[in-house]
Length: 415
Image 1: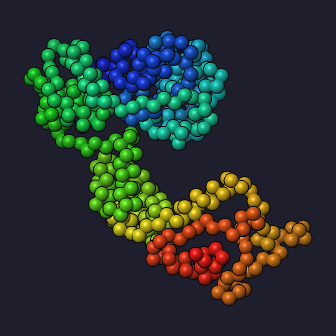
Image 2 (image 1 turned 45 degrees about the vertical axis):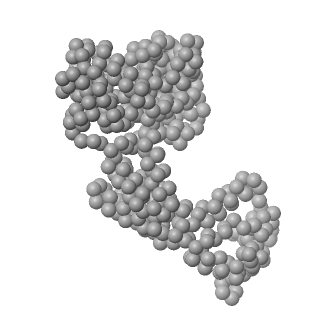
Image 3 (image 1 turned 90 degrees about the vertical axis):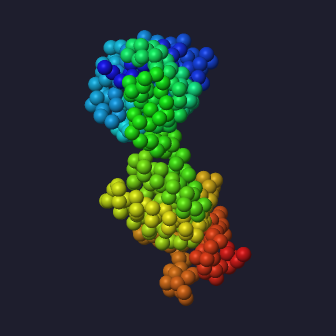
């Protein structure tokens, strides 16, 4: 027998749980179905909110041929085979689950068929498509965001299953408590229904939190490494370290570890933070974070938890400075504003006689020929002469740097 989640997959749009902003009376998906002219589209949202089901419903209600691929197992060869099959079907729908896992070559293989209308592409992703889907393909698709299902949505869906499923309706089971059911499933509709089925088989009359906990064996930390929680917890983790709170940092680290988060993802974010939020206030932070990244990549769980904890605590307890981050952002802003300002002739490369005759390199002062290996010459383009992009942070280490720069560049750092 199929799992309950498959048996209860809605056959009509009216039975679709949640997402009223898309499927309600004034929802864009309902209007698209009514008109029958389907654009290619990408459904973005956490797991178990109906992305796959919605694609099936749209194809069914518009009477389109439906092909499906999983980005985990399919390659360019499979994509091209489906496109060939779709040529015999007008406006066939090709649904690709986890489309963010397709590499550039696989995504590029879809472009022509999407553009000429051979297929209507429907992709599902838990990742932000603006980061994970090629710009060329993304520009040819409408992106629709699916929201996490509310407790009311999940309860309505669960009660419908108990009321309508052939295997469950004769048991006359009711849901007395649902907190544990929804918490353990993490808002994933598939998990809710499949856990509900297990609980219903064990129940006499009512489903309670205690019964669900017994069926599930243990309470699973609410963390979904592919969905919204992934971003919320890593955000809390980074902000805790930035805010110099080692206690909160190790707590959110534990949430990620318990949820099975990729150790390299955590370590990579620590490397970024070490430079962005600590920088030259403590240059050792970047070296430690980089070493931690290499170590956890080799060691993996469970021992990697110790290395990550050491690194997170060290970074949280370190002095903070975002001066280097602000410097590059300010410089990038200037480049975008003023464009490609000419490099001064004195510091241009002069590998040929013609370039030397054009005064490339003329007037360059080799720093090591001067006292303290410093020559007071301007390196910025003429239009940006005297600009200051790096402003040392207010911490002991960068205060030393400020005094050093002030000694060399009084006109720039003489404040």
